Each structure stands twice: as C-alpha cells, then as structure tokens.
Image 1 (cartoon, one colour):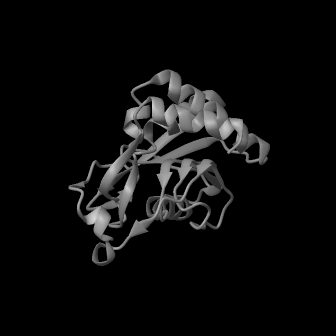
Image 2: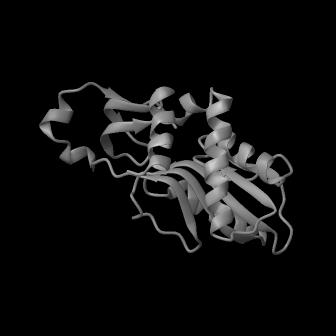
Length: 191
C-alpha cells in the first residue's frame, strides 16, 4: 500500500468508517467488513480531503464534466463536495419504490457531461442505475468516481471508473456464510 492509499485508509479508520463484525450489504451479501461512509461524512475536513484526492485522480484521467450526479444516499455528501471543488453543478438521484430516479425538477440537457460520484461500490447496482438515468435523460456519462471500490476492480461500467481505494474483503451469499462469521450477530447499518 502506497502513502496515498495509507492516508485514505487512515481517514476511514480515524473516523470509524471502516467497521468489523457481521454485516449484510445492500447487495444482500454478507461480509466481516463494512464501510460506513456516513461516519466520514460527519467530518467535513475528511470529506474535503477525500474529495481533493478523488478529484485529482479524475483530472489525471482527463475526465471532463459539468455536472455531478450522486446516487442517494451514500454519494450525496462526497458528490456535493466534488461538485463544489470542481465548480460543477450538483444533482442527485433518490430512491422511489426501491429504484433510483431524478426528482425535484432536476433535468439534463442533451450531451451534458455527467460525472457519477458514489461512496462505496460492491457490485455497482446503484451506479448502473445512475448511468441509465443519464442515458435516458440524454446526458453523457463522463465517468464514475468512487471513494472505495470494494470489488477491487471487478465491477465494470461502460465508462471510465476511478476510485481512491480498491479493496476486496470477502463477501458471502446468505446460504454460504462461513461458520466463524455466522457466530457474530448480524448488523445492517445502511449505506
């Protein structure tokens, strides 16, 4: 792990955003580790620093965007800070009947360049929904920026994807939870 990755991991550890126990992820998979990014988002100094680091990677990849779209709930705070630092417009999608939708009068113009910003991606379901929202609204997805890629690069999107950390903690389907993990009470902390 390089010094930059260590700084990011230290931020998650210091803010108690990296949890250990027995968790059911939004994907339905079970894990002994959980990123509770809401803990990081309480600390605006941490959010500012993480956004600086992530935005630097976005710029290094040459991604151009005028709008940031964050899937609710996880991406809201980091998405807004990325937009603020980039001088971009900020919008978000929210859940309606367990699907993401744009509401509140948010619209996209044809070919508007959109950066999807998310906190943690395990399988990428909400990111895929956000990409579909952009496509259906006539915008152009410039890429995806995330704090943590829990899939360690296994989640694929049709646009460039950038993360601060790529980690792969083991996950297990509900019917294949190992005995050591099954002994720990289940928590479902929410994204």
